[in-house]
Length: 203
Picture 1 (tube, rainbow, N blue to C red):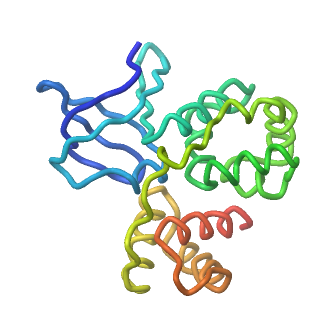
Picture 2: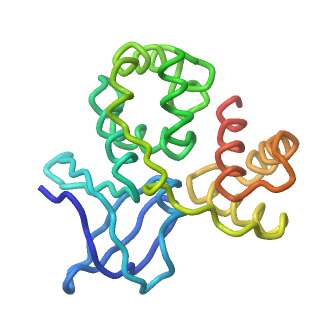
């Protein structure tokens, strides 16, 4: 079983990345949180990996921190929560927010995750409420915040990432307008995308 990959970053999108290790390119599915922490193309990179077998095909899911990998592993132990839905959770909520929502039984926050309804949210709380302490959050494992970019640039980048995830441009624009009204002026790209995803989940 592959536990981690260290090599050269060949390509990256908000959904996946290709990492070359000794001449072999590995296709890895990722969450937005991992995408934000990846270096520039052709840089050296390491990701922690969870391996899943689906229809006789091996799928690799990569994470920038061990906390993300552990959260993913816990989520996928729940009936009805597959790898793609677990990635959606990590794309929508930060690890601290996810743990807090589970510990406090906040079904509204968990329901903001695309693909998670009230029944799934309740199941997540029921099965993981006493297990969030397995996810450690040392500051040394958290990626450094990216420098603040001009607002228009951030909105363009956020819109592009969300459209790549399958959302339509008009609904992204509407949700982003609602999201920016709720954010502080000094918001970062990850904040904008997470908040917009929550608005999109509301419909």
